[in-house]
Image (cartoon, rainbow, N blue to C red; front, top):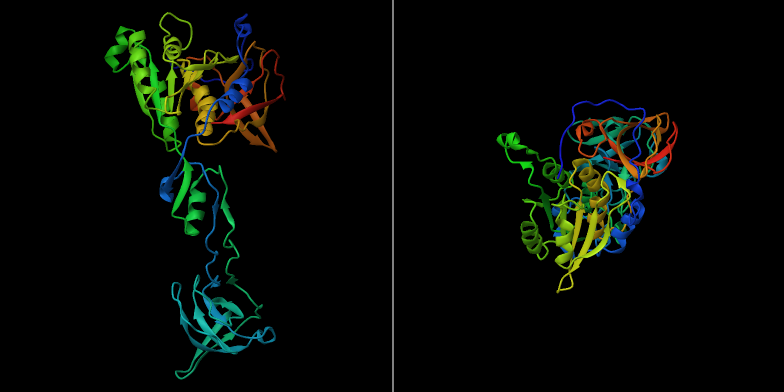
Length: 430
């Protein structure tokens, strides 16, 4: 695992460079092939029932239909007066006998008669025979101690300011569909409809394995050639931003240590996410150990930069369940790109979402040199005059992360051709 941070951030006009025949290596698959293989070779997890307050950012495993009308009953949309009158008698100066008051939450069995009105508040159930509601701003209250009445100071339309029963949602109406992600707003809407429990796809139990003897635990270790760990905090924060917990652990670069850890994890977790150890170096043990433990390799090495030596493998356990392993290279920029593109896709597929990433289209504002591999560049995007405008940042090497202080998108740059100003490119907001 190789991790470091850079210091300068400057926009660049020409981002780099050909790396000889590296991108021409046999056996490499394209980014789109790799993503499609994630979809094709991953099974969704089982379904569980949770209380609504536990389901933020989860995916629905079953459509939800309303069991009630919304509103539950016809109600006042304002503070004012419910009136019983024919439309012809709603002119300015018309008076009505005031017979009482209804507050929100009360269920008074009152039936208005012609010429009568009742004080009502927002959300209160309108009584039977209500023709309209007059907001309090257009009503004058007259009280001589014996009788009370109201007088309209403006003409009033029939059926004004009444929320009709079921006007928002009818009983039996679809509220949320299979596969829908439960956002804050979705949870609020379902709660208003009285939904208490909901069926969702289980969230995968995920183990994160950080490989590498060079990772520092404290400042004193730096003097011995070690470096700070960026990958564990990066991955932990990535999952935290999605309201998910993962188990993070470190392992030494020895075959025995990697074997012992992966052998234990394969029976306990739905997904093992590793960083480092997936290339062909003398201390890259993740891939050979994974295969030795019985995993089937789905793909290894993607024609992209950063993150070429990526591994995806599947273990079918004796009970018919699966343990998947996604091995990301150790360089932190490769880890970052891998999380945004591949981990995000895989975690969604495990929750029933067999969908490719949703790329936006933006316009590059400067030239980019050709490269033999498709690149994922950290850029800034801003909306201007109806367009999304893209600008690259410097320090794009795979061991550098400092430009993430400014980047707000990750952009796909096709291989083998120079990008001229105005070229349309695909990207992901980050």
